[in-house]
Each structure stands twice: as C-alpha cells, then as structure tokens.
Image 1 (cartoon, protein in one colour):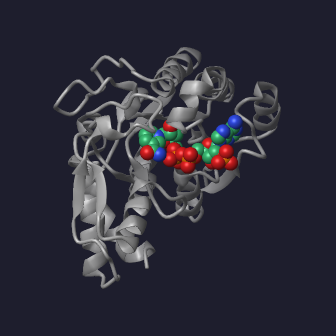
Image 2 (cartoon, protein in one colour):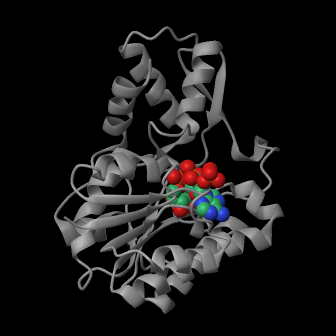
Length: 290
Ligand SMILES: NC(=O)c1ccc[n+]([C@@H]2O[C@H](COP(=O)([O-])OP(=O)(O)OC[C@H]3O[C@@H](n4cnc5c(N)ncnc54)[C@H](OP(=O)(O)O)[C@@H]3O)[C@@H](O)[C@H]2O)c1
C-alpha cells in the first residue's frame, strides 16, 4: 500500500482527500497546527523523518483579499512553501503534487484556459500562487502542479453553501452574473487525482483539472437552489437575481472575470472526462445538504 501525505489535512480539499483515500492508501495528514507552511525548518524536520510515496499539498493562504494586504505572508505560504515541499520530495524520490489555481490568469479570455496560456495574475494571491508553481517546478523537475477552480465540498463551506443559506432565509438573493469559471467538487477531485500518482515519469509540469462546463456565480447558485427545491428543502427564494462584479465593493483584490480551465490535457493523459459541474452540485446537495 502506498503511503500518501496530505498537507492541509483540515482544509476543504485536504479533508476530502484524507477521507476518500483512507481505504486505499496509508494516508498521513498534517493540518496547520502540525505542519506550518511558514516554517521551512519544521517542514524539513517533520517530513524528513517520514517515508512516503506521494505528497499532495492542498494547504495555502486561500483568502484572496488577505493576500492583497499581507503580501509577505502570501509569498511565504503560497510561493516559498511549495518550493520547500518540492525540494523535500525531490530528495526522497516521492511524487509531489501541488494544488494551484485558476486565479493565475487575468480573465481576459472568453474560452477555456489551457496549460499553454500565459499566466498573468491580477492579484497578489494569483501572483503568489504562480510564483509557487514556478519555484516548485524549478526545485523538482518531476513535480506536478494541478490548477483547480471554485472548489466546493462537504468539509468546509464555500460559495455554494452561502448561496443555499441565503436562498433559505430570504426571497431576494443576488449573485454575480459576469464572472465565469467551473465549480469543482472535492470528491470528484479525489478520484481524478488518483491516476496521476503513478504517472510520475509521464506527467509533470502543469495540469488543469475541473468539472466539465462553465457558469457564472448566478448560474451556479441557481443550480444549487433548484437542486434544493427538487429535494424538497424549504427555500424562500425561487430565482437568483443578477449582480455584477463591479458592484462588489467589499472585494479588495481584483478577480479574473473569466477563468474556466480546460481539462483537455488531463483527458488526453488519463482517458477520463470529469463529469459536468451540474451533476456534481446535484450530488452534493442530495447527499450533504438538508
Ligand atoms: N477554494 C477554491 O475555490 C479554490 C479555487 C482554486 C484553487 N484553490 C486551491 O486549492 C487548494 C485547496 O483549497 P481549499 O479550498 O481546500 O482551501 P482551504 O479550505 O482554505 O484549505 C487550505 C488549508 O491550508 C491551511 N493553511 C493555511 N495557512 C497555513 C499554514 N501557514 N501552514 C499550514 N497550513 C496552512 C488551512 O488551515 P487553517 O484553516 O487551519 O489555517 C487550510 O486547512 C489551495 O491550494 C487553493 O489555492 C482553491
């Protein structure tokens, strides 16, 4: 049985990986308190004492607005820490998989971003994550960077949970209609990442991975609301009204308007096509919301 280390074991994606992999792998998880991305020596000592076959780094400073005001911290956690983890894995021949983001793009395109598209971030979060990708690949030529988008799942609330709560409590709910990406279910990611463990020789560099299709936040929220109604949950709202990105005065960081990721390269490598985001949202509501 392979030993897989999950860094960020209490996060939205990390928790899902811990649970989904528990029956198949010898999983060792580290949460923030056990392994601090801001402490390179602690990472070297802790991980250096352990034998493992693969390490997946899901931990990061994911608060996009905080990154804008805490630049040094953002680069320490999102850029330097992945370099250190990549270096540790290079030293032990372990597979290193690092999770990155669609926010490395400026959002000017209107068709899915491929791995060949230039990453031109418009926020400190995006810059720090892009820098982390580069540093990890420089430190470890076999590293695999997996960019994901709009991650949701049962282990930590995200936009979709907020939208459902709003729609339960009030008749009028608004969500942004001029920003597009693809919701990506943590339980799907757990399955989709697995074939990449073994392909260390064939698959390195950058890979995009998301559920299929694309939508705005408004369409995403509407789909979740429809699924809740179909399940018989009492919802006050019937429709989600449109608002615009420009109306979001509370946002500190700029967000890309369009950041849909093409999973074409992933499909070509594995022969697997991620299912449509609507199916994933429907399953999430069916199995995890009540
Ligand atoms: N969420 C999205 O929509 C989205 C979209 C695109 C890409 N991504 C990427 O996907 C990955 C997983 O995201 P997620 O949604 O699972 O995020 P998350 O729920 O915010 O999880 C991130 C984890 O990192 C941990 N962490 C933060 N600072 C740390 C530190 N100094 N040392 C150790 N651990 C630390 C957090 O622990 P504490 O909470 O205890 O601090 C948390 O468990 C990240 O790389 C993120 O950039 C996410």
